[in-house]
Image (cartoon, rainbow, N blue to C red; front, side, top):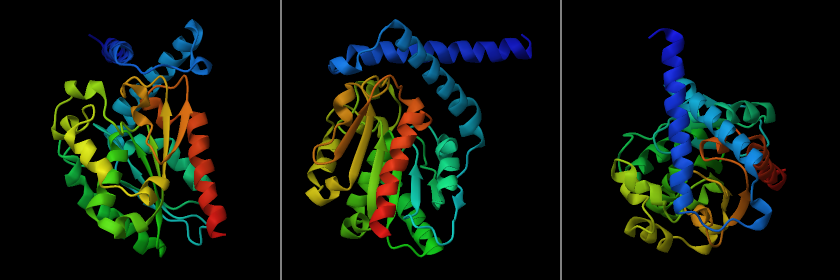
Length: 275
């Protein structure tokens, strides 16, 4: 098999995985509001976007990704910590990072390791990166943008470091985070996958540990067509600001222009708050 054949085989496997994920997520789907229902062509566009995003993340961005820090002196924004999801690394944020640079927002990534470890074990990694980012910028508070499992890791960090963790968070923006778990987690390996099962004891304990003040700092962006988080309304977190999208897949949340525009809009609220 030549190079072209190899690339074609990888693309075909990725397409089959994406299609299968949409089918499995459909079996456990929550009800889609009428205004978010899609016709055949819109579904094809969504599949194409998710396939493209998945191919770029798994075959290009993640293999080349590392946890970088970029500082914009005298920025009017709190610095942003970028927390990736299950099976990824900081390469996931290849589309958001340039937008943050254009906005003059200091930012840093963190790589959650081991890949199949407990979500609780990521808290010290996040704490260390928060300290580094605050020291580099002189900021007392940060914002966090987290995809999927990364949102749970950020919440677990706030719990582990008590009031100090929560007090340092101006806003936690989660993208497609299974706040109440996902039916597809039973197919994933690792302690973190077990913790992300539907309404797991770990998720219930995390929810019970949070005060209304913590929830008020969270903005949950989610899609009614998530192909990994199912039911999709698992991303709806009581006490948080919940913002729904339609026609976007799970991986594509990190590159979809509508979603990224909303992320920047929320971050601009923080700029106005500190101006």
